[in-house]
Length: 297
Image: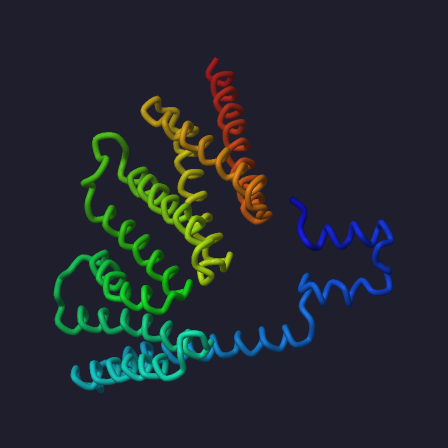
């Protein structure tokens, strides 16, 4: 499947399009941005930076004035900011970029509120519970907003919860793998399921069509299975041979989907990077093992 850019360049080589009109054709087909698109991008970027700066500045303001402010003043300030963000989102409507920034700010401030509660009352809860509760509380907002950024934050919070949970507990799979393998194995399974679900639902829901989110989820899945593969290579344990099976299944599925069904160069480049790292590590391990055996001989 050819990209729009390569198809247009092919037509230019075939003289179907005049070379003098190349820039105009590329801009009119949105292959490269025109002036209005650059302006819209800069406006949105500045709005996002401003909104995120306001949300994080409130957190730093409370931290800096921790001793000077009473507990009720801290809670009132954060809660008022959350309510204001929700009102702005409701008034502007879900489709405007300013409304999306407002709901994202409310999502961040909710995490600030939970951290403030834990720090003020010293609940003694494990860190993973903070992120798990944060994800649970923003779930209704994610469902209502239908905004990919909120869903990505929700997925990221669940990933953090899983990592912190396995640092505090070795409940699942403890009899099969070490604690580090537990973390990456669960992250691989979780992110792969999210990845597959996102791709399937993207055909039904237009707000899931943004590729940046699914690519970041794919990076999490690919990094996890690649790490497990490296663990098998350097530990050389037969109990971890299943990592090889799942790695090749993952690689074959990724290649087939993003080369044949839904062409995505980013995904294919990530697969190539993972393959390079794994193959290089395999030969490096074999080389060092051979060198050690020769040296001991």
